[in-house]
Image 1 (tube, rainbow, N blue to C red):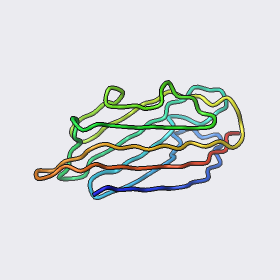
Image 2 (image 1 turned 45 degrees about the horizontal axis):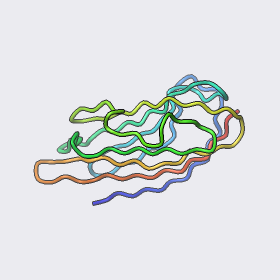
Image 3 (image 1 turned 30 degrees about the horizontal axis):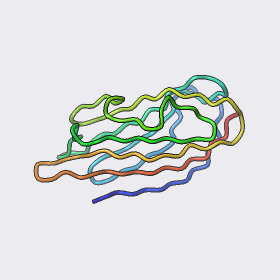
Length: 138
């Protein structure tokens, strides 16, 4: 089963001490969470963290192609597509840590797609997610 989620959020980002949660998605097989590692400040380097946790009875398929493609009118990324070589994986989780900066304040966007594979004892499935976020950097 292909899970397709398209979510649009409007966030007003202000000074926060903890991670900035951007996106959460759940399927029968996994939970996906995308956060910024720290508060968003114009021109500061920040890490975009993509976290996946497999649910009971499922595991991350480390042989399946992994694809994370972020785009933004402001945030700059080192490449257009991130894959398995960029991820830290185990049977139950995977994480991508992507460095980025945004050089302007005000409204900006962050869009992307993300896919990976999960398996149980009898089958494997491709999980696919799309996100579209509108952020306001102050």
